[in-house]
Image 1 (tube, one colour):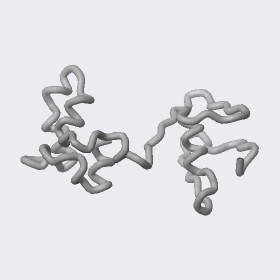
Image 2 (cartoon, helix red, strand yellow):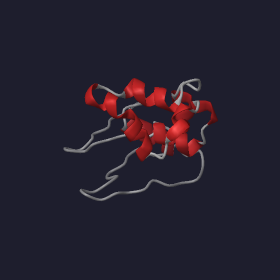
Image 3 (cartoon, helix red, strand yellow):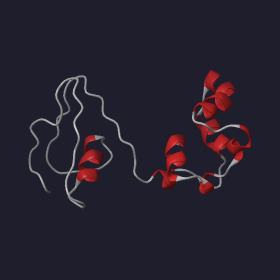
Image 4 (cartoon, helix red, strand yellow):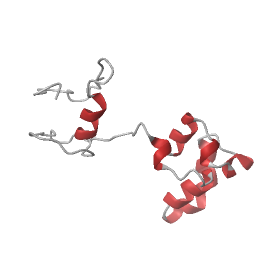
Length: 114
């Protein structure tokens, strides 16, 4: 592993960035911090720390044959099911664009769905 110990990644209320040369383990580290990947050693997440992970391979996580509407409709629950069109409009999917297949969307639009 490229680092054996990280003392402090972020301070309270402060956002930090992680940068290095290509192929040095940045994605691996973030997946470990998010609990998405196994590792050896120990990791302590501080009190009141919320972790999250935004995958780089969003396109692989969506069914390419689904429409934009299908993706959100499948994820929506309760009252949100009646607001799918409004929600899609907030992400600039309007009119017939909600019936586009995921496979024809740009990377940015695919990220908006995920």
